[in-house]
Image: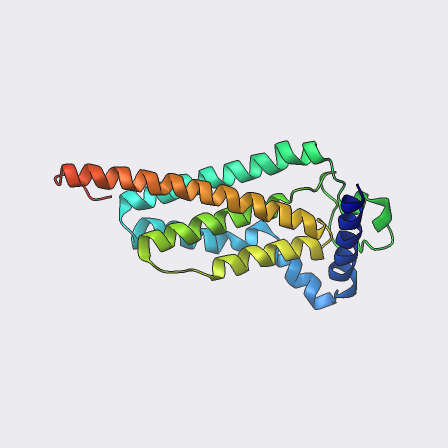
Length: 203
């Protein structure tokens, strides 16, 4: 029990520093932009273009289907299962944080652990990173920075404690790796079919 109390105390200190002490008006705008889902529509459009026109079509279809699966698992698990299991209050509902919250964004749902934003974006970053490296041998390291910045923005605007982000990131990475393994197995199965019957299209 003392360990959890200590972690909660440290978490709230870190939250106070990120949300209040490092705040600035210009940074408010940047962080609100970072965590807004509409900001990243061009990125998702690019990923769709990349999967359909920069790699072969069968592999691209696999990539799209498993991207949707990855997002569905992280979002449902974090928002519909784990939040209601842990029942950790969001900072804006926590009485200890009353004098800290700056109110730059609406409170949202009551529970915060784990962060669905962190789970979803780290899940996608993990799946995309390893799949793209598997297909093209290129390392898109910026994907990790992208997911981290969105997680940081969630703390900055007051939606989550830092440990909510850590928990969401851990969930996302685990799911992303699992879905990548599905992609790997699917890719390998189709490739083996091609080796047995070269008249088939190469996956």
